Amino acid sequence: MQETNVLSRNCLRHVWTAIAALCLVGVPLGADAAVEVYFLRHGETTWNRAHLLQGSIPDTELTRKGVRMAEETARGMSAAHLRFGRIYTSPYLRARHTAEILAEGGVGPTPVADARLREMNLCWYEGMRYRKGTWPDDNLRRLFEEPETFVPQGAGAETFQMVGARLRDFLEHEIPPLDGQVDRVLCVAHSMALRALVRELAGTNAPASALKALQRNCCVHVVRYADGRFTLQETGKIFYSPETFDAMVEPRVVAHRGAGDLLMPEASLPAYSNAVATACDLVKLDLQRTKDGVVVMGHDTTLTRTMGWNVRIADLDYAEILEKGRYLDQKQPGTWRIVRLEEALDIVRPIPEMWLDFKDNQGFSPAFAEDVLTALRRAEINLGRVMVATFNLRALKYFQIRHPEVRRVGHFNFSPEKEPRERALAQALRFRDEYGLFGLNMPVLAGQTQPDDIVRLRREGLWISLWFVQDADKAAFYRPATPDAFVTDHVSLVRQW
Image (cartoon, rainbow, N blue to C red):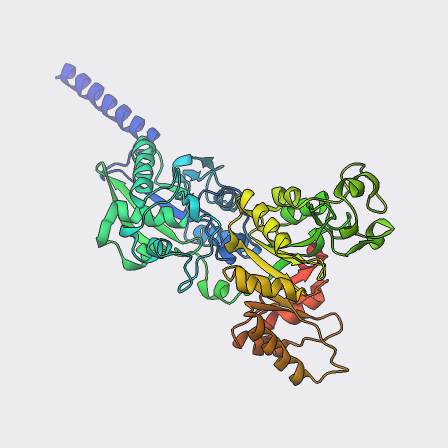
């Protein structure tokens, strides 16, 4: 009997040792182990706001609104007592930044990048605008409205099936080893990728909202892993107040003369780099043509103000300007010089949209325009990202007739002291009709354009930008009228509003 009791005690000791070991590795007792995988779309980006397809473009930035979305999502998850044992992210900047904000908000550890979470490669369509009713071609419309019939275009372009397959590969290789170790995993990915995931796991049985082409920024789809199977458990979960963010209207920032912020010469290489660094939504490219046909950047038709050289750019060969011309107060030899269009495009390519301003009305020619378009094509910048925004009436008419696919924005100016406001607004609408304008760039320096004018013109279907909004107070004054863009030389000041 005593021997039996000893054996029983030994058996019990082994049982409790085994139970303790199971508890140490996190295997739940009395229930099947399961892992919840939260797939979250990144916050709003500058390209989202401009309605441009990003696809595999890796370096698009979050807007201030996008950053706040991620911050509010982290707070919402914390309030719901959600803690993630692992955070994975797509390697693309917009997803990585979102994941880092969430981790800093305390919902989980440092994110780990995994290429399988990247966005769908759209190849030829990357950089194109997506707006219902104005699709560049019917195939792109099908990507949004009839995905089963979409045909990928270009080397490396993917189908939803291909994206779904790599996401399933991620799940099957990364999640099962975590079973029993963590309860929840967070994966920061992209809109089309989430759409592909839903189709892969649930097919046509998925909720219609989860199959929509555009998933809300920072929305979450929850996948449950249990008994060796992945099932779609919940879709479209939001951890912030959608109404708050839907009501946030942020005019885009147009970098005038390269967003110099008075720290560097306008239209210089450092100025264009600053436009990228400050995540401007548009950059204004002031176009001049030298005597020997080189397209260069320059706001004025002469070099008097910038270089102290009273001569027209159109009367000089490019080599002569390069040899003798340097911006005033130069501090970095060789960098603050006149810039060729190709050099500027190489820097500003990550900026969502570009304004082309043909500065010299008399020097404009079809050859000039075509040289500029050729440079854009060589830089692989889709014309859907481009506007011709100018006082140059010859340029507006040329593009209206020869390249109507390029949006045109007319610079408009008037003096309230000399011209009644109603007459000026009526003239603006005639200007729109004569040149088939997409929008108007309206002046505010002397109080010409008032908030009510912006509301009226936008009701007429016009895209409205304001020049120049140079400080936070003026930005705050005009913001309630919901203009589409602010043109500024002082990006940092305007961004304070």
